[in-house]
Length: 327
Ligand SMILES: Cc1cc2nc3c(=O)[nH]c(=O)nc-3n(C[C@H](O)[C@H](O)[C@H](O)COP(=O)(O)OP(=O)(O)OC[C@H]3O[C@@H](n4cnc5c(N)ncnc54)[C@H](O)[C@@H]3O)c2cc1C
Image (cartoon, rainbow, N blue to C red; front, side, top):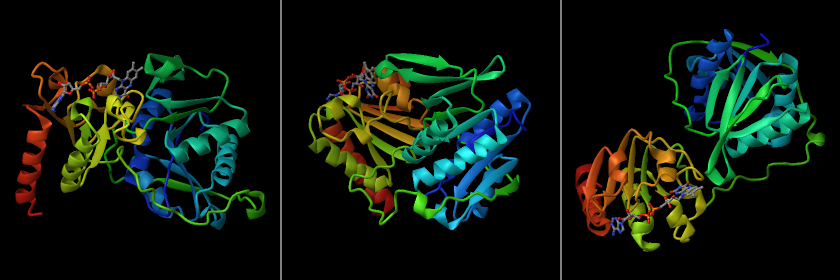
């Protein structure tokens, strides 16, 4: 149907990350606003498992382009396939995750179709028969809402974890396989090898994050936090003040101009709780704040607060978890 809502399903090296399905939750709300269907679309060498999973997360139909040429992720080929599907079916809205891969496909497909694109969206709501898309602007000092009145589909990339992950159910989706291909010779890139970056950090998908701020005082403080994160199988985050001090790279930054995270446990060490930091982590299931100032604003957002010097508290936590977890 013309006013359906479509969600692009990402996958990596043949493996499905359940996080790929997170946009199906907000997609469902928008589809019910339009009185239309929630559909997924997927591109890859083998898409049957992905299509099955998308059905379990709420998609009623999955449009798929399959072929060996899509075995490795190459933005150029994927964007051609995405543009083909969007042009053929003209859904009302097409949502992509604002990841490197999602943004790559969305931007190139939008350009091929001659449509606008709202990137890094953090809010999506029905507005007079269209979808209003909200994103941060001017370095996070303002938020701006846009409606793309002329384009169908309205295309957006959506910040990971900006919306709650839907529950997995027992639903199934009808799979519509489209025959579309791209000649290898027409793609200017070839994947030679995948290398894992030494500083790879998957903050967005981590269940436990141990985060540090200016209160750590120096780079060594992050080594201590890394030990705690390793003990708990988590990742290390940071405030902008710590990143600006060059104690840790930007990809660890949480907040309005960093990443939005929603782990089960967020441990904030030496972080005051500025509004721009809270914007990126306040929806965490459980927030533990460690700060030596009892009046620090972070305590207002925290589930548990520990007033103290992190240099004393964190080693005790490491010891305690070591004996509890038998590590
Ligand atoms: C447009 C804009 C965008 C921004 N985006 C972001 C963003 O994405 N993310 C972000 O984090 N910030 C962002 N900021 C910056 C934000 O306003 C704050 O300046 C920043 O979050 C402060 O970082 P902090 O809490 O580490 O430092 P501080 O505010 O300086 O707090 C340090 C805390 O550590 C405590 N402390 C000190 N020593 C110890 C110790 N030994 N043990 C325990 N506690 C101790 C202190 O009591 C204090 O509460 C942005 C600002 C602007 C204007």
